[in-house]
Image 1: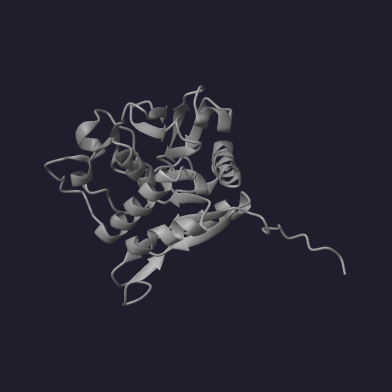
Image 2: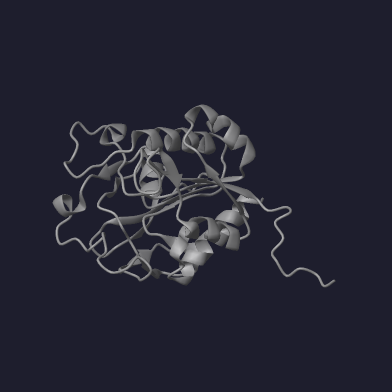
Length: 246
């Protein structure tokens, strides 16, 4: 028999991937978890083993013992403004408190252990907050002449471009100074703590990427690299999984 041509994952790093959740309706009348397949596929194509994580803060320590890196995904909900000290909540803000409680618990645990972390879309926003930053609650109300960050065209197509700062982890990973990206958000990072670097932004000034240069691999991007629209997207996943394998 000939050798299998399938990829070997015998020594591949395990990447914990956070899921979305609903209380019921659609897929099931009972509460359920969900994850778009391209998140898991992007991890696997980069050489990692994706492990979907149920929302149990009490199990976060046990999950962290199993994984080599953490991917915090996006979703159609928002970070609670109270987490970054806001005294009011914009009418457009939608919460999933159970998901956020879990993601914050496992994210902080991963940061404490210096595990490689990649935050995507809402995951980047949560990462910014966990590292001491704040968020814009609704871009159209705070950014004059803002681009269509909740892009009208399909997510499988680019909606705009970002500028990438060359002397950053993101710049070194991608080898690019610009990238074509998709986006699906009405919130964004507003400010970052002193130790965090802004590594990408749009022409309207909205922050599109952050990183903590004092950690081995701690990166957030506002767009969705799991769609692999630009060469930068594949490079991000490869670098993340490689860091988790070290």
